[in-house]
Image (cartoon, rainbow, N blue to C red; front, top):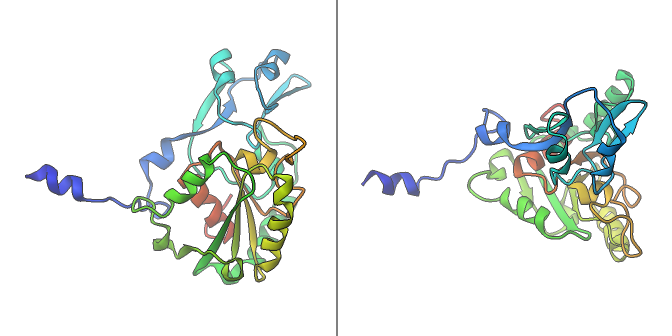
Length: 251
């Protein structure tokens, strides 16, 4: 019967070598869609991701938890934006419309990371560490190993030991109790290495930040090279961040 063979067949994505409908159409971010700006826009956001300055509204995707309140309250001025290639090499680059910056500064960051990770482009190992997540980010990280995404096809592997890792993938808000374990993990990585902040929690602290028990993300704890927004980021977004870190994709 044809449905048996069709159901048993696992189709592994060919992204990024080929386009993938899910990766291209998934609503992974929120964007302002008009020049209209009102202080009420900022008030509806529970994480302060929306800022209104000088009649200009901006969305900080590093703070956005994709709750959709801005889209529901102001459907003519905000929308969910499809696409999974949302990782950036600079924290400020997560703010849309983009803040003023020079092309030279952006190029310098890209060139420095490229020079540092040139030796990592064939095969890389990742050490994932959770420093205070709600578990959502971890499900997406785990999905990278299933037959759909199969990161092994790209020469990307997860390792239990930081001494064997090239990339430190960090999820969670950065609890104060994990400050020392995170620092020791980073110290154990051989050089060169890359640090990826995966998810809104790791970037900015998420919904509740900072508190007596948490930091506002991990930027004050370790130097971050790649920022992957999302709450949680999809496997495609995580994969884009990893490939961006090792110079296989552009930001």
